[in-house]
Length: 217
Figure 1 (cartoon, rainbow, N blue to C red):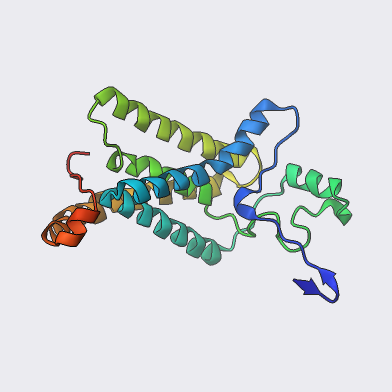
Figure 2 (figure 1 turned 90 degrees about the horizontal axis):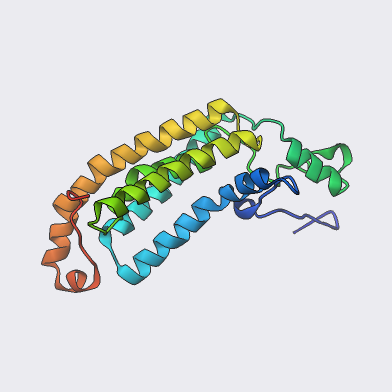
């Protein structure tokens, strides 16, 4: 898009990752920001190839969780903390004053309350038992442990990398866990109670969708 004859350049926030060169921990914290993308891709793959109704509803929950996060951000309108990495990056590009938002917030979304990454990961950690199909206790326990470990790691990385304040991450964690529990206990129970019987009674749907019991997860 042009603005007065000049081309306006925007970054793609979803995969915009900064880290301190030569610092392995900083690299790990930076790449942790890609966790929601990886999880989202995995879920989409499961939905398309396995046609699992519970996985599909978990995916729907993730979408609604993200919408909720955007509503909360626009409600609170709390700015993110000053990021040294973003300021250094801006200076390396020759931006006057090292403005980390390039003057228009193009490096990442303007508001930080609550943390979207933290909210996403906590929601997923709560709901992961719903998409596990293994009956092996050790396998299920390991998967749940990894999900919670990753969620906590991502949450801490948002603070360490100056993307969010402690309060923004804590609110994101609380929102993600709370909405995850609501989705798991209320929504998914009703999916099993009403949606699954409807699918089983409908020949076309029963042949298309895979059904597993929510109560056993």
